[in-house]
Image (tube, rainbow, N blue to C red; front, top):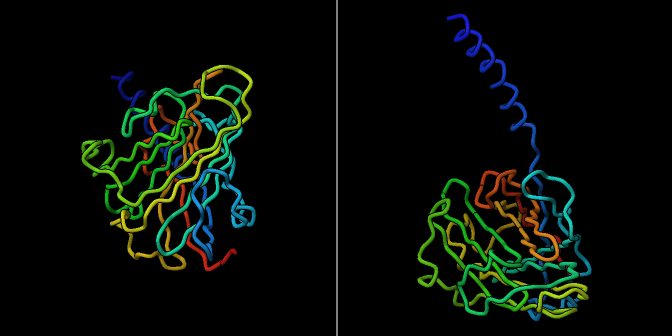
Length: 244
């Protein structure tokens, strides 16, 4: 009986600590500027507007929040029609083999965007692009409850990649870049479309690296062996800041 009481006391002491630790975690927030001109989605990242906005905070190891290796930089912009996301991925050994849309790209090297415009509703969109320019787009009704992959393909989605290297799994590469334009009309749970200044959405950005060293990187780490944790997503805030 004394052992049971002691165990209960230890549990009671630990619970407030866990709750306090979870509550003290500050999720990242990114202010998304509005672009005056549509971004040319070619993967080059040479549109002048990209140079005028700051990157998101550094990507970190998703499992423990330690500094992310290799280096990954991402930026976002918006207009009435699209949410634009860019990635710049340092990579000494670029590798991927999948070339068909909606294959399981996360098993190789890939960048990912998760968008949940209304956290009161369970649905969210997941986009993945690999260094071969292959796309996986998924509409999930709730956490890990996707529509069948081939049953939902965004009709106006745009994406492109550029390589400084080769996708052959051999050393000697430098980086690869990616641009994605997610149509606003796909984000059906958003309170306002197009978004209004001050609107806040939940969003996360990820990168999976395999060679030479496996890594799962995140803008807002989930601290789990799982990217599908909407409560750990960061936030984006749409601003009136106009870039040209």
